[in-house]
Image 1 (cartoon, one colour):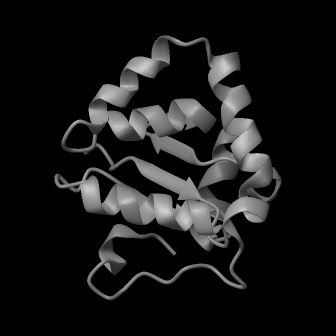
Image 2 (cartoon, rainbow, N blue to C red):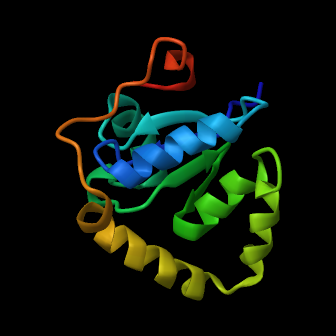
Length: 133
């Protein structure tokens, strides 16, 4: 049985939390699960991919045995959402180093531009089944 793709995100980042909420709203087929990089699930799963979650400033998408980071993760998520959002995947033709350069600028400044929470965002009861702890 194939597991659902999992989006790992910075649970204290306002931009990241808004992105997760946007993704949930546009994930009409319930493709994705979510978990904070600071959570227990991340501490269990990510070492299997030789990833230290404490040293990340990027979303991660784990889809089966593949891990996607930065712009590649964001574009692959967009590809599976509803509406016109899958059209964003066409940006995959831009070389990764250019896409990730833009992504890194945003990631580096995300707390300054969008703020930071004291603790991870807690999903509502109706959204709880979309998350791993």
